[in-house]
Length: 424
Image (cartoon, rainbow, N blue to C red; front, side, top):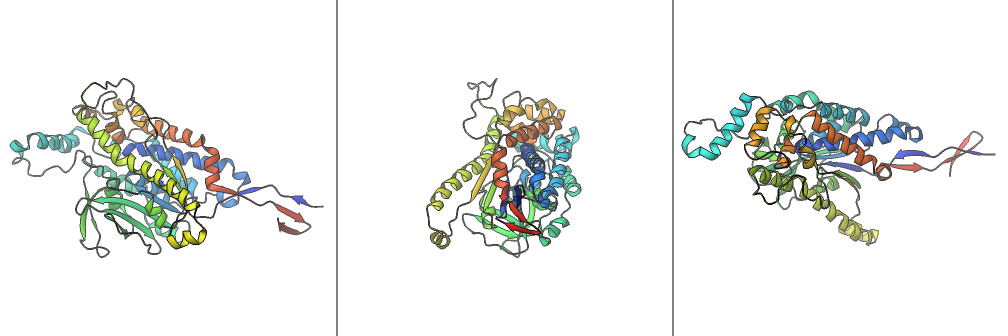
């Protein structure tokens, strides 16, 4: 007489990539989704192989842009234990203050933002008196200190060597050449298509790469990175990687991903108009800036996911031999995005911004719903980031079955016969 052991789940073995896009403080939503993923794996741990219960990394390929690059790198340096990595991210994002990312005191704001605006509006008068021209609206030097404390970069090499991680990639956009550059860290070189102003550089990811990738245009200063000897030109100035990023999923595919989980920070579909919003009123500078940033951060990802889904439909109709010959193969995709408008949430938390920052933004039209989109990128304050973490957590749990199907598979039950174990 034989007994059957209960079914057990295991992580799927086909290479999976996690793509985290940018969006400043909006990236707290990603942390909420990851918190839910970690919780789902814990909840089913009794049916899982020991590796999952111990925190095995379900995403060996990590791709991030802007604030998403910071989250991806934090996961990479703790790829030996996914649960610990997510717990650290949650700890940081649930306790954020703006002064951890940029100077929010009066002197710091006057030194950068007020002078920058003055130079824009009265430059023909004051340009001679401003010898050191400010480079951005805000000074994000505090972020450098946070990244140094938060991320143990040498652990990325260790994770690669021990097989917990296959690759980490972060994107940045060159103001000098106009190219979008994917910096990736892996044990081996990978072939990326160098076309449409896109190039790739194998590098050891560090603080400068993350500062460059997350340098929101106009808000934060550009960062100088060295491309030599990989590409001609040497030193170039870089800004946020979401700019000119035509295909956010491309790096993951060329790094060998067969499955891609995408966490966006913008609501898909038709979100409608924000409440208390006067559509007849001429748009403020803050509204225009927020709309521009949304175009940079949100539209490319939505378009790329839609394009990938269409390519999957085509690839699935092709015979395997033709797929190999043409290099076209289906890529399983799971996309999770906010169920609510993040700028709508931000409008409830603008008062949480430090007073000098709030005054600066109000000067260009950020009040109530007007300009809340712009504020949402700078609201590195715990009440707002916790609200986004909660939203991401709920959205991911609402798709529990899809998430678990993407991450895990059932191992065939085993039949015992005396001392032998027979796989059936």
